[in-house]
Image 1 (cartoon, one colour):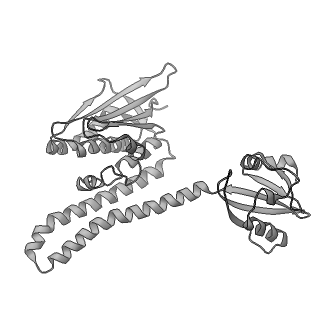
Image 2 (cartoon, one colour):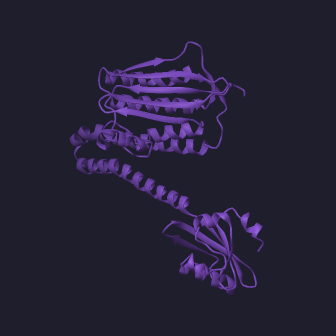
Image 3 (cartoon, rainbow, N blue to C red):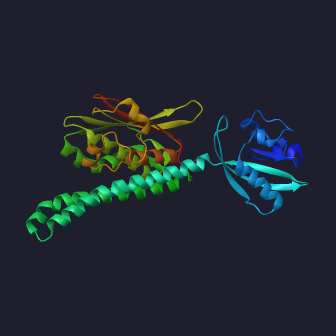
Length: 336
């Protein structure tokens, strides 16, 4: 095989001669195995029985056309090895990195497990109530509010799951609505006034008088602000304040960004929790979150909305002082 041809292969690849020596390798393979020497047996580099079986099978035409190879040492990870016979017993082997795929599968399995746990808790409570109340109207009347609360909790979880799925499916599409930041913040805060009054927490907004126009998905921006403010209200104490601030950072180049900041003087969280706050179903205090009606998906939804808008999300918090979440989104002029 022409040495220049193997260099063009976009994954780690190498050629094994009929004598089982390495006849050539591309830069990606040499990065994985810098000790590789052309002319030496490939077994000195890759001691993998599955790979030997693959090569023998390719030469005989009776073996597997792909195998999974797990590497240890300097080149760690799981790879899918495929190959083809070039002629005269030479074999081309390509290694496809499966680590990201394996991580995605593991994340999906974890998600299903977590979701099952989230649904199992209210279902178990409802099942127990129904069993207790059979033939007892008084007990049923007593437990109805509890059962209704558990049903509402499952409904919120389903709604958040559907929202998360929709936002994820839209991440590849650029938002192209011309919206006004002040209108989005007002639309998010209006229905939360009742919750704020019940909890005794004030909601304050600070935005410029002149409208801030930018391109975004109006519904998603409203949802992101709603989730952030709901979190602040959920854990706030009477007399606390939730403040929403919006502004524009305009650069000399004409580019710029729109920022939305939601801050509170609530309980805050410790630093080691911050990197995990946007994980699905992650809770700093699981019992308190469930009791307050949280689904554990609010910040995960916000993260995906920010990703959809090609922005960034920063979280600052200190126990007993409060928290501040800032969303920074690229500023594009309407119609640009």
